[in-house]
Length: 198
Length: 96
Image (cartoon, rainbow over all chains, first blue to last red; front, side, top):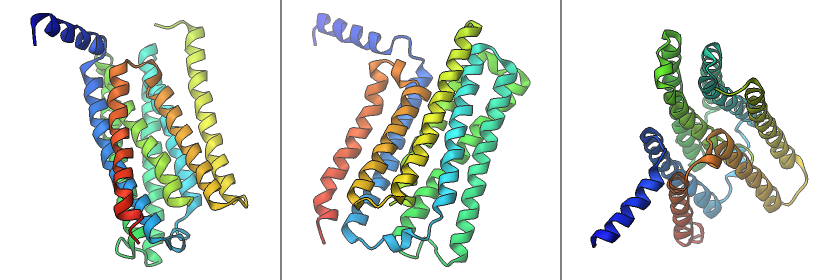
């Protein structure tokens, strides 16, 4: 590549990344890899369900009411998370603590409801070994639950920083934590109809 | 810092998005209760899921104000995911 072409490429790259915090780019790369992880499972689920059929009987045993309730809980947690991020931008110290606390509480509520669901399913004799539907169900909801747990840990560390007053120097961390949290919400937006409504 | 007026408008926008998301949850549930052909019901339910995901990504993840490079990073795995599904259809879904 000659010097002129080299300079042109560098100019394009500089422009593309200008004003984007490195942490945000890194997090979006991470989320891109996560899309492939969940995308792979969703692809297998859809194709195997189409190929084999007869999963409706198994799917009828999942509790769609609790699934819908959990969807509302998670969507509400996305609202509180964005309001926490917005509170950082607006300099609202109490708002950051309140909304991060609410997001953590709603995340824990989701996991508790999911635990109640799992308990009822195990009590009925449905385990990951009960058939392909149940294998996919426990794999995808379990993996999603682990991601949510990681989000709760991240938000708890942000809340501790907010309580100590050290978050103002690194307010971008709330934005990054929020991006991750919203991604986990987006995954559930697809898991809910896939596992509960079809 | 934003003015009080801007601040109230931004919060109201986020809450309006949340209201739409909640509305779409109930809309999807209502569709499953209607006596529609299975294929129509599935198309509507997953269409609603796509709209909800787009709203979260656009407004809560701020994709609407991101630069092209972030859009590209998000789009590439989605295209790969669609490609993966199309590639595997003959081997899995059509192999009865």
